[in-house]
Length: 453
Image 1 (cartoon, one colour):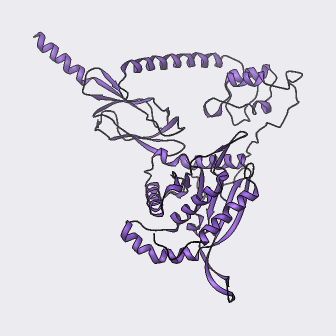
Image 2 (tube, helix red, strand yellow):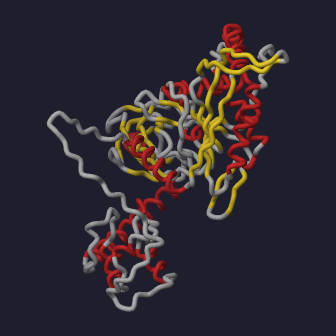
């Protein structure tokens, strides 16, 4: 009888074993992700490598698979919740004694749980304390959130809302914390003479975006921006506010490339199993140009220039919903034309299918966008931060042009493309910005139309 009891107890332990499914590392510099969709519900059976949940970062959407077989018994975060990398997002019941985590560290799990409870308790106490503090400063016209405690400190120190807006916040979504405002007060160089001084300094004051009222009729439709659309919008505005954008333009004769591609594209497809487009040819030329002008392959951090050791080309790709994503070709200067073609076709195909991995859209040092695919002859692209330049390839069009020959000048039909180069004038002057596309032009126009691939 005792043996039967022990066996039943052992079976109970097996069925109650728990596996903690954690949010995996999503790539370089990504610390958190948003839950976008649970593909499994509580009570569902989960197989090894089954996708349990879909998440999104400011870089890319991704899937989180299960590392074990079992049954989903608990979901710890609802849809649209923001989760930190390494946090447990769900519990899966598995066969085995005790409990398990994705790191197989029970002790660490218990300690983390206790730490989380302690942190939650402290945060709750702080929140209750903040709620009891008076906050006479009026922030109703601000787009930022300020806690009652922060507003009370600002009021006590004579900081009006205009000055408070200039305080850099390190809290969630840029919120100003108690530590932020106290640090600001310690470094404050100009103290107001009275608690309600009207003298303000506008040097650090951020510009507020004033929304123009829009009238609507009964036929108008309101469409909510997608999550990616909001991220792209913010990224573009931030880039324009960060970099001093300057553009240079140059017209390139691509006749030799057009003729060569038309001649070899069928044999290229037969031998390599890949379609040969103009993009890999141009991307390879960009990589060669960067090697000749390495100071375009940089980033700016404060007053320090970071010269990149690798040439990682971002390739702007259109998604079916109209948004853009920029997969990155790592060490592009090391790829042959065949290798570049296969890499580009692979990234472009998986971009459209939303199958890119997080690290495949990170680490870019220079970006190329092909606006010619939409028929545009030229454009002024916005720099992809923290890079300092971006190249736009216009549409290839036939034009009458002057052809210089030993017998004299002739008029002929040539294939032409306008290339536009946007660069950050803080660190890239006009000479470098212009020489860069002049070198690109020389490489393209020197293409040997009789070469093999």
